[in-house]
Length: 279
Image (cartoon, rainbow, N blue to C red; front, side, top):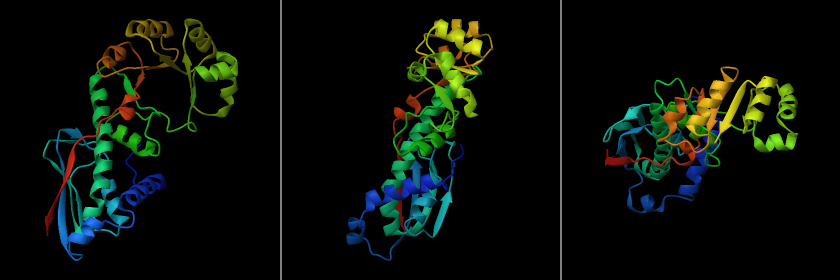
């Protein structure tokens, strides 16, 4: 997933963020800064990070009437060092000031996701295992957070409930078992993955020909044993409380994928700053 800021969902969430913050107007800037003042500003990284969301800045300014000049100095997915400038802008001071917090909120949150994603990817380097994100995202920000995760180097899992079939334990219960669930899903024409919790379920799923299996809440040793038994008959995803400290032992089991909800639900916003000067 590329950082597509033209997508209607992205434009809508940016518009709503601006309305939420600015409301009827920025009373502080209006009261103390001359209306005709032109200013220049620079966005800086205040720590080492992986950048994500900087492409939103022109859209943010556009939705408030535009600026005179904008220069992107880095792109989503780039590593930025502490003190490194990542974008420059010049335009009406009121506009730069009223867009400052929304701009930083997006940059700090999305770059936090990308930075954590990169740490997971780096932790499994050389194993052949790929890191997946999940649907454990901030409501309303999923598309942006998944773009940020991809900027950090992870593979986007399904965007929602509509674009792939992932049969989990409650689906299996409701369907009446592994085989029933797989048979019922087979005609949908979508990728199918199924969670298996016991060796009996694993054998049943393999006998049916399930193309992809989700193994949840195993230890690395248990996962390695199950993957040896699978022996290439299906692709394997591991999940369940896998952290930065444990992700490499899981990756070394031979799994094809590891999904980590923490990349989006536990990412900490990183520090970026906006400095204004009178132009």
